[in-house]
Image (cartoon, rainbow, N blue to C red; front, side, top):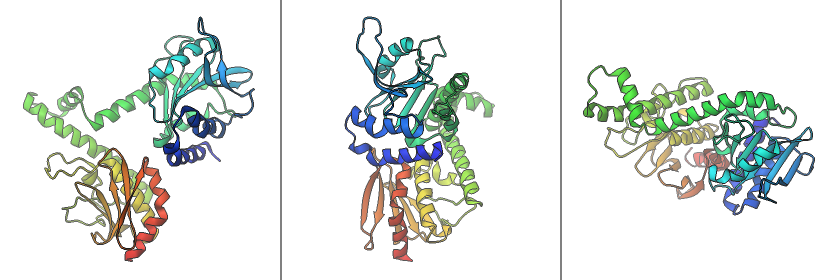
Amino acid sequence: MEIAERLASLANKIAQQRHTIETEEATKNAFVMPFISLVLGYDVFNPNEVVPEFTADVGIKRGEKIDYAIVKDGEVQILIECKKIGSGLSLVHSSQLFRYFAVANARIAVLTDGNEYHFYTDLDAPNRMDEKPFLVLDLSDLDETLIPELQKLTKDTFDIDSIISAAEELKYIGAIKRVLSAQFASPDTDWVRALTARVYEGSITQRVRDQFQVLVAKASRQFLSDQVNERIKAALGGPGYALQRDDASVSGSGASEAVAQASTKDVGSGDGIETTLEELEAFQIVRAIACSEVKPARIAQRDTKSYFGVLLDDNNRKPIARIHFNTGQKYLGLFDAEKNETRHPIEALDEIYEFADVIRRTVHYYD
């Protein structure tokens, strides 16, 4: 099994079990040890490879323990500190890693809650752990471009020199991507001003700034949705499929329409309906599942203020699923033969695949 498949398998396990995990110890047993073993390839039961409760006295602090130390070629290479899943990771949680990093001669430190992994090294000062990670791995939203870098940390291909040489680039690319993500979600004043100056030749007054605050947000989301549409077109081997709002006149078979019509937040429409990229992605998953039973053109959507609906033949009397992403907890609404809806809580979009049989069965209620 390739590392990408092992990561996907572990991510699926986390999605299914994370709600039952209540302690740090349970997090380590359920998620962190499988990551060390299945993904990185180290024998968690061999103390020559993985040392649990690793102790290295630091100054006046005696007997403190780090959760795991990974040994390669007789040397401690990686230190891992664990927190309960969902507890959040920050520098506050890194104090032990900071202290141990300096005395254990390890070049890699990892802070994790079992789902998210922050990888640190000593780019800023020798033998001192950086304050910012050079790599952030989120199993619930996996960035596949990071897999080759993670591969370098595995037992079979461990290459510390290659890891360190690539760490600085990874650190800043990751930071830039997170900044861009934040700006696309909610552009700040400096971002709006910079883009406005590139396209607007007049004097940038307060009125102009207010106008472009809306335009930049809208253009950013349309740009992202255009990229999504291109990926969908490539995956399906043909044109993308239009998504429309509840009051739109075109059907889901309008393949030539841009996905941007539904994936942007239409600030100026005044209808109170805001279709997000996450809803778009969820729709595409439901649609991909249902396409095993009917032609893709028959799977349509209608976004409303309270939910995002997936319909057969663009018919409200033929609901396939409802996507409830407007609250803190996400729900996937599914239907029985009497059209009674049952809401299933989900955390990640890939959990929708767990209901594939129900979705396919629902399609046959109407067809």
